[in-house]
Image (cartoon, rainbow, N blue to C red; front, side):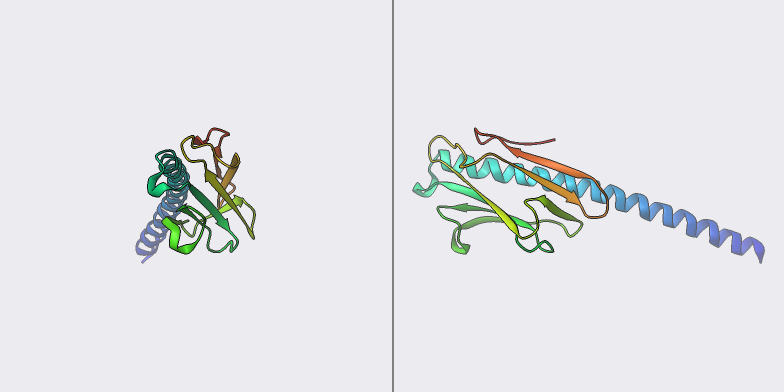
Length: 146
């Protein structure tokens, strides 16, 4: 009987450790993937502006007005639901540290040059740990992660 209880205890300990390790790996991967997704969106919008696709400038909107549902959109022309070309909702384990809760950042890229209306830093945070990932949009429109 003791052997059975010991076996169950060891199995439970191993399962708990595996679950913790899996969640940590998932959160790290989600953070990295979300940052790369934002950089891809930045490049997509900038390239569309430079080529003047649809005869319009393009932009991105990083939206954290509802911190429980953070997302970003790539849009053409002016930001409106009808102009959204791509929408990406962050996984529920992530959020934006910057822009802060209740805020959004809109960046428009100039036609032909692709120069952004502003340079900015977007900080993604892992809700379950202090880990963050920074996405920088420089004055020339280049997007990069740390």
